[in-house]
Image (cartoon, rainbow over all chains, first blue to last red; front, top):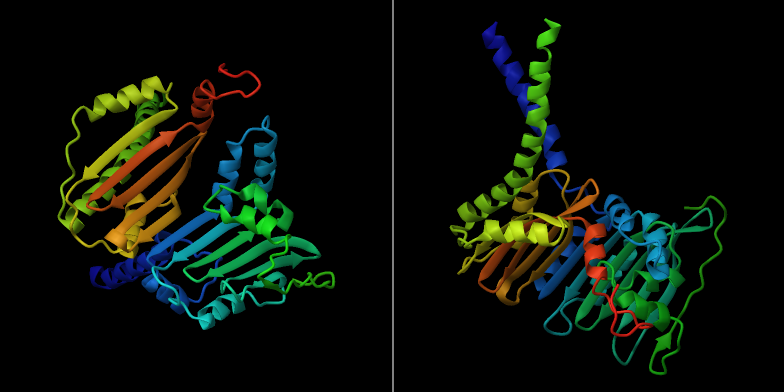
Length: 209
Length: 164
């Protein structure tokens, strides 16, 4: 009897530990950067910053913002409806530490029917590129992806939930999103040295995701 | 038999807060112990830390509580950011969410910030390595109360020189 029970107990323990392992691991980030690219960028970057704010943390942070303050109240309303804010920032000591192909791979990971490019900015002079894509579900914005590539810096921002480009400035100062205010205003004004190619959001049939 | 039911109930009532309190300190000690054993370090003794924590708690009207600090000096070992992050996450256990991870190759600096909702309070756990120093800090903050305390010193442009 004991001889037959021992393997069963061992099997149960093994199965139990297998089920427990994923629970111990961090929940996967919705920021689906190709693992090979992420590893390469992390290796070459001198500074890497990762910010992960899931829905729970955003809802919790929203509780501590004041209704009395008009600005804070606006941010509170905005973030309590969001599903997550994910930021990756790679800073490099020298230029050309990442290839245009890697940027293209990052961009391609969001080239799905539910994501529509709304801003595409290229600067020949500075070599900077900015892409802003918006996720639309049933004609409503459900997220935003920002990819900003500078010669020594690569920034990836994913905001999930109902958000509009005009509201980006409100997130200024939150979770390392300082640059968003510039993007918000900068995307509207024309820069003489930049070759801009802005694409307006495509009209999507209802139900498209 | 029923009249003896209060004994196990009272025991359970006493045990629950004890386990919760032990758990919060346990995760801190778990992280510190892991760092000590993995990198062969010893946390520096901070004189009167208990007193400082008590004063911090009282002077902030309990808006800052459950303060734990461990300081490591002369950290010359190369610390792998991914390994440190995994080790801290394992020791903290579920409930804590990593919100910030910063890695700098210049000097091997590392910063990990975890957050955990604690009812109306917010638990913060920070592991920061800068140059040859590594600090581990756990604190529980009541943002509302802390904001009230800070707002006393806030400057009002319409009434220069006054405070709330």
